[in-house]
Image 1 (cartoon, helix red, strand yellow):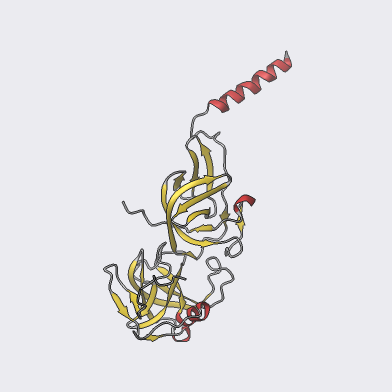
Image 2 (cartoon, rainbow over the protein chains, first blue to last red):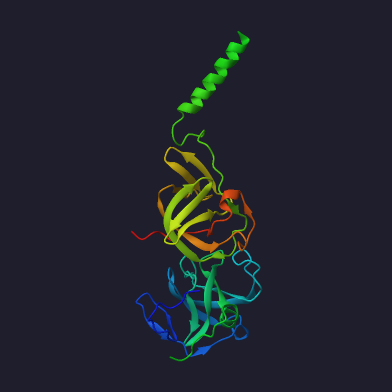
Length: 133
Length: 139
């Protein structure tokens, strides 16, 4: 887990482009509401900005995460746009001003991505995602 | 006379092996650790120099060396310039070269798959799970 640099101000922002621009986060969406078919977007350090539709929210990517429980979300881009490659890990998944999760895994093809949903992230890291400055 | 002939045959074979140039099939093979499943893989990135430290092939990134654990089917051999690692798609990685590897950092204890061919001397090191595809290095 990365800690802010000394003197840095922690804000309720995520990066959503290479420019970079900051997107304000004002709410959190938990896994139970991240349903199959929902559209969600991300920014990755390699693939950049992209969106797709959730294909499952009960994935257990055990070849990527040791003893993974079936709580991970997989997203697919039907237009063939890449959603995951090396360097995307740790990037945000969001919709509008909502925090949905953080990128974990390449899914075996680049047009899918796997992320940890927001509430599972908060539990595993013992944090709360900021929704106000 | 019969035993002299055998010595001659053995000596000839030894000379052929000794004179073989780099890249010949007689270059010694070198085992690199591999995992089994090419499904979901970690999506981080490390950039650094490929190095060999005894039985360990590492990438030396900003945080020090990481022992590379390769996709299934990856092979390696030694030639006069050092170790050469070849993935099943033919991609080659040479000692002292600068590369970007997708994947993620683990220890032996938390690596998500069984590892084949990891030498005992490499087990205490930080590992890098080499993902199945790698973004190109920026020029």
